[in-house]
Length: 327
Ligand code: ASP
Image (cartoon, rainbow, N blue to C red; front, side, top):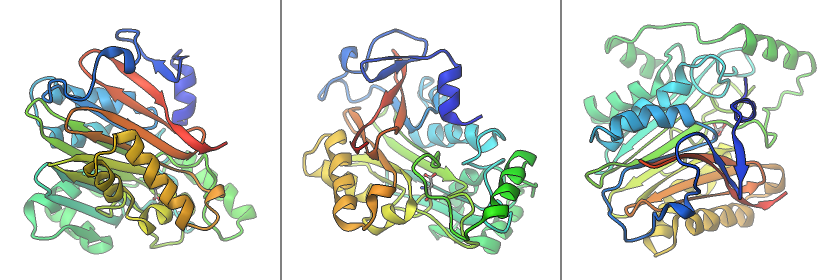
């Protein structure tokens, strides 16, 4: 099941751009959560309809746990879900039928770790965390990343599910030897959180573009592109066509726009505008950013209609429809 279908099947309903999923039926705007409020109020936001992932993150945050632990726990939900064909186990393969995974994590202090082109490991975010904590490096790729994971006790597993394999075989029949870059096909989870101590953390994990060239790596494991956290300012993460995000160092740019005084939504909007200015053919692409600042204010923006993100606080668990430029 696609995540966009999941929204339909949960019986969620839309209300003024906000879809309510249980909890108190009020919009984020109506929750009284304004800039300058208690900065220690916890919040987690994530790309797409990752309500369950937010719930897992919230279990950590609501017990006073730290933001980095929370996002690491949260993104493992879609990583381990075979029905999620854009992240981790069950992800759509590259054009050679191999599932290759990218992930990154970053904490309030600016420490970070990432893996790219990693095969056979169901939870690449856990490997990224160990790169951050157990090595002097930031990014490990391919065979070396796999070797590191195995040394750390990870089990190598087949990640290609029959469903993704069948889709790949169908694609092979008419394959025009180009990756799928339609605007519907991006469900990477990027998640950023603020904990009760006022600390930020972020994580991003994906199987990347379906049918990508072997060895292709997107924005998700590139610190500053798919994810960025600055403990003085805020955090941002991205989904969509990674090449466009990398070209503008997207998540770092969003954080820099927040540093200049922009709200999270305006910062995301400005970064999307930068893509539209700098990246040719952006009208055929989808990119969405979400961002969170130290006051717990959040926002998102996308090139195209259809981008949504999930928000969880102590009072609500909601899906927001992102604003967008085209569509
Ligand atoms: N950003 C991801 C990538 O380019 C794709 C996605 O968001 O689904 O690898």
